[in-house]
Length: 74
Image (cartoon, rainbow, N blue to C red; front, side):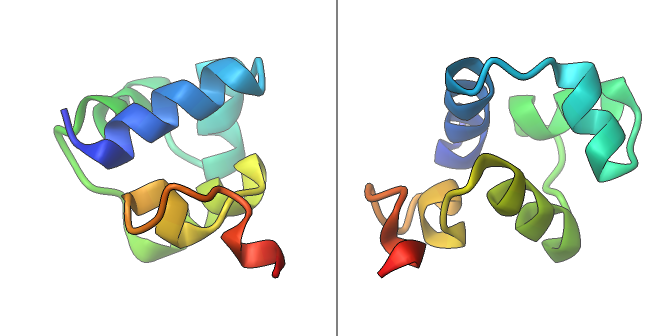
């Protein structure tokens, strides 16, 4: 499992968001979102940005370039 997939699962749990609601915000099906979580497919940049905004974390945190989820707030 990739860092991106692990972070999605972690953030979804921390924020107590339902996968179906995240999928709806992204405009994808539930199954399609699950594929992001399992690493079967990588989301396009627009969806990755939407996920970072939804979870209020930096893109760098979401993709594993930093361990600081608040690096975008500096």
